[in-house]
Amino acid sequence: MGHTDYLIQTRRALHRIPEPSEQEFATSDYIAAQLKAMGHKFRRLGTGIVCDVKGVDTSRLIALRCDIDALPIVERTDCSFKADGNYMHACGHDGHTAMLLCAAKMLAERKPKQNVRLLFQFGEEGDGGAEKMMAMGAIDGVDEIFAFHMCPELPIGQVASCEGAMFAGTVEFDVAFTGKSCHCACAADGRDALKAAMRFYERAQHVNDDCRNGTVFHIGKLTGGTARNVVANEAVAYCTLRYFDPDVMDMLMMRLEGYLVEGNNLSGTDHRVTVHAVYPPLINHPASLAKVRALVKVQTCAPRFTAEDFAFYLQKTEGCMLWLGCRDEHHVSPLHSDTFGFDEKALLTGVEIYEKLLY
Image 1 (tube, rainbow, N blue to C red):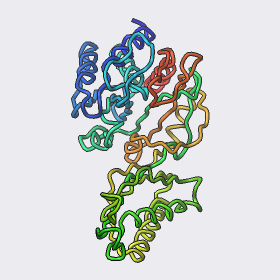
Image 2: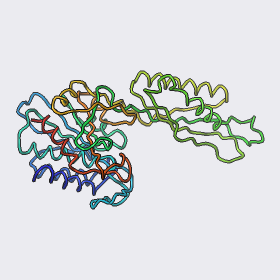
Image 3: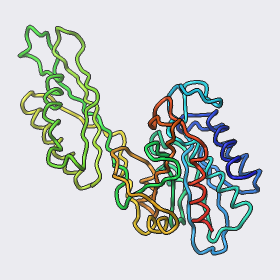
Image 4: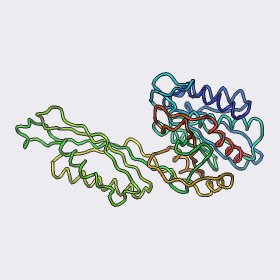
């Protein structure tokens, strides 16, 4: 079976079984069955899988990574292999996985020039699957790592990346405000947590005015109070900060803390910050990107304020991520939309680059 036929068959089989982060049981079993049929040995790390292949040069280990989870989106495409239920491969992870299984097929037929690790990662859309797999030893001994991300803004056949930051880091956090409840007729006897939250909301809108091109701060949800005639004793602001420079992130978080203390002093309230997730910026390594540029034309793209947990791997080892074009006249929907899709021939470019890296 040629690359095209295998990619079509594999991608469509995976597309039919989308599963949430860290619950990719059928997906993991499908990958395992494919690897076993090819004669590969592998090990499971949770619902993830790691497969090592010995190369001619055993002194160096290169890793290729894909993500295997899906999104909680009801699919509304008209494709014949449409997923049923409440999950969908709306970010191209079925394509990423099909390419890596195609690489596994090549590796079963011909020995690579160096040791290779195929990394099928769970939970990219969840709570830091990359970091969890690293804790299980997923990249122990790895010298360099590469990955693709489907890109509906680029035409099929085109590839893009950039030196340095390609995706933003993110801090997802809540600010809980605590005051004192009382009847609104006696408002002076209370401490209004909702008013303190609203003051913070207004003040924080300008937190990144002096570095707006390199950061995004957003409060997407504000809750508080219990009744129309009662002074609120609790309120919560749900916040996200996107950044490319960790020093700038630290500065802005301290600035926000200053606004909160200032608000407490004015209103007599208290606050508590709870951080739910911190992702580092995805920083491509120049030498790794140069290696790919020597093999294929790579366009230079602008950094994006979206986050990608491949960033965790690049904190520990060299490597880079590449955008893989998948746009054509029939496939124009953005990532994470309920109509996202692509022609499998878009995956051939990624497989060809993997082949050049491995051989």
